[in-house]
Length: 250
Image (cartoon, rainbow, N blue to C red):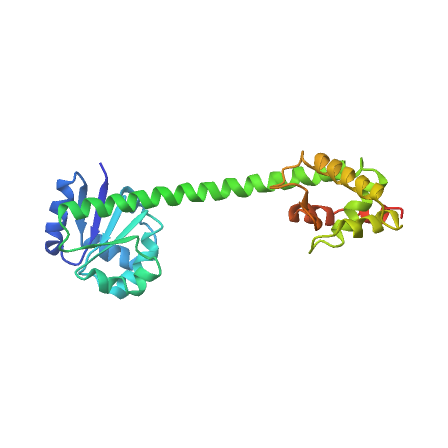
């Protein structure tokens, strides 16, 4: 059974809401004394942890919701504002700032209350799941990056002289597609021949294979048919961290 706390200045005004919630099998406690205590104190509020939902009655003014709402959020996942006019409440500062999780109205039927609270619970679960996914993704990303750094160093140490030159030509023109002719001129420094173009195709193929073991989102070297080649942006960042360019013998 879910526990609901209604903080109010007049418990009589919330009797109908309390009755409807109880018919939905919620255990409801309505209190003016606890509202007064919460309004005056910022400590000793551990009792609030017992309530899954805290409803701020329409008998409480908006400035009090602005002041008390952030404190209550530290104790309950669902801070709900009860109002007479829902559209007007959505323009209130406490609603826009997310101080309250949701709204209910004095005229809500039992069906409407059931769906509003169910929607709040569903949203909360989704938010928690999303936060967990974000944390896990960040941790995975850190591990993935560390592994890639080690792998790229290992690969660079095993590359041939011409493979390093091709990689260098692509890296130094990272922001664009580099033509096959430009790369050949950089690697061999001679007039372009069919033999060199064939060798370049073989070199880029080997480089793709060697870097394919890394956890890159796409191929290490992108082929643009009829235009040339370009390095993957993730690989570019990893290559920039190494000092291998200084050791290439041209």
